[in-house]
Length: 222
Image 1 (spheres, helix red, strand yellow):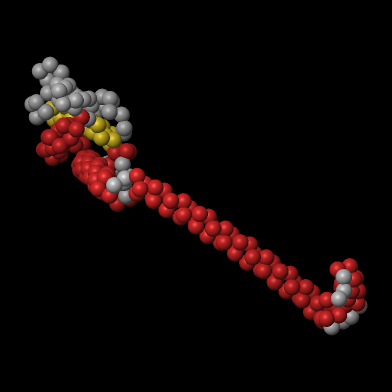
Image 2: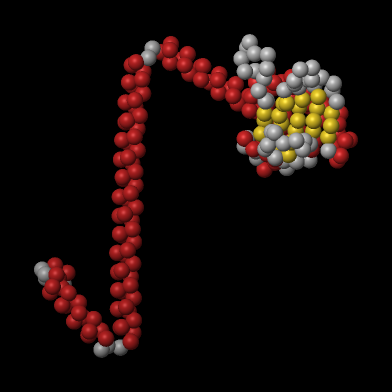
């Protein structure tokens, strides 16, 4: 029977199908139900096969794209190695690693100082900023800690004088003045040297740490 069907043209096969479906409609309900299930099953198989073929096509295209990218990257690496000596490549890599390490260590140090200040103030480190107000004439530099991210605001949570050691705080931080003063003194010693305009300058820009500039984990924010 299958051989006979293969000899039929598409139009002839369609006519046979219409005839069979019409005949089934005249038979008992059980046959009609079985025919309906057979049609749905055949359709499902076609859909599954089509989806599988599409997924395989996408997978092969991705593999091809990755292979092209890998070969391109390999060509770039080869050209780079041809242009540079091994000694120069090693030196550049080491210099980059050292620079990245310095940046990482500085950021970690900044985060530790911000976190300590935030802990003393019962705030999240991302919600505070620390700034130096340069000294003028005979007055020494001051360290201020503000809530928010404006280093120029006048309503400071903490205001410490490096010359006199005096510290002003909001009323609810009065009992923490000794710890806050010690932190401000450490801030001056560890951070301000970074912010000289030049090695020959006698004035400095504002040294400034903004908690919002750093990434904090949920645990660190508590």
